[in-house]
Length: 343
Image 1 (cartoon, rainbow, N blue to C red):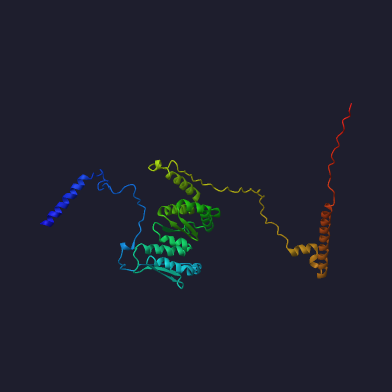
Image 2: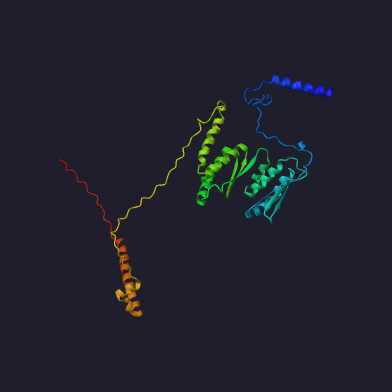
């Protein structure tokens, strides 16, 4: 009977608490209650460090991920693989580099205490396969930093158009890419048909939007301007709860058609039922000039005469051009001022 009495007492306490807590009216606020512990000074985006004390026992199952890498990355990966193994050993992850198959594998061990670290290690080998340098790729093991590999190869079919739009992401001397990195606080690496990005979650969302829009023919400079304005507006505490739409630029899409070349209309010729006259062949021309019936020696002599005539003409032209240099130019003599006669 003591257990029943305790259960009844707990139910009564719950009912009394429900009566004390004011509930919001309406369908949406039916089961919503105030949270006095959830204050404004709490940072919900902050990721707390996972310590080994939180999970002292080893995992019951082994998790592993593998990814392929291109042939040109083989030499670099061989050089840095010792640094990769040392970095992953600290967090209890084992890694294997298979040069025969061209793959990288990561797996959990009995020393692994953080369950999310295997996903971080998977992202690490993905970034290494996409030509991200090792010092930058190792930052993915830190808390609060994620990665996103954006595929851009299948967005545009035309190869020339794809190369031009990919070049827009870089900009002149990489200035556009640098501006995107500063505004989003992300690392961006454009390589082949993919774009590898690393940084905070908010920044990755903005980078993906900019890159996909760029491949859909929207220049990144429009998004960069918008991010710069948002950055300045965030500094003003008065505008924290207001809409920023009135400050943000609204760009209209202009569909500029290329000018068509004017085709000049040719005058129509009078219709004649007879076909055009046949052009004379080389033999016909030789027959007309009588060259066809000449002997080979005579033909050679005639060709030599023509050649000599052309040479004499050319030599006369050159000589006349040389003589022009020796003709003195016409000089304008300054007019002498007449002295005014003194009266």
